[in-house]
Amino acid sequence: MDVQSKRQREKETVSLMIHLYCRKKHGGKELCPQCAQLDAYARARSDKCPFMETKTFCSNCKVHCYKPEMREKIREVMRFSGPRMIFHHPIMAIRHVIESKKERRRMEQNHET
Image 1 (cartoon, rainbow, N blue to C red):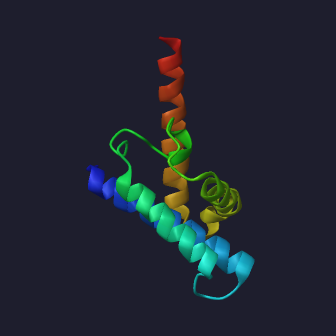
Image 2 (tube, rainbow, N blue to C red; image 1 turned 180 degrees about the vertical axis):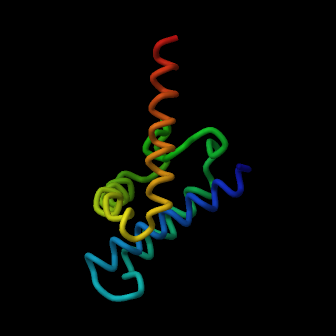
Image 3 (tube, rainbow, N blue to C red; image 1 turned 45 degrees about the vertical axis):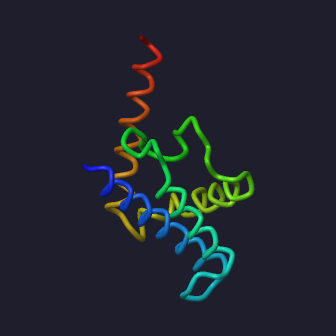
């Protein structure tokens, strides 16, 4: 997968997770102002990521480019939305599990050498 496609898929995934979180926590069909701000911020961070070619997920990155308060907000969204994604976006959720397992194996192999 080319870097631009990977970047686009990451942005779509994050946006879907933020929308799910906002809909369940704040009600309404549209994003509330705080969630809209987080969505725009997360998308901007993805656009600027210099590690997109090699990284799997931001949580696995050694460089944390999110401001601390935004990092905490996105963690809260991920903790809430992650387990619920299987019901709302099953293919995306399964892809995430597979990619996470691959990343874990790759990291374990790097530590062994």
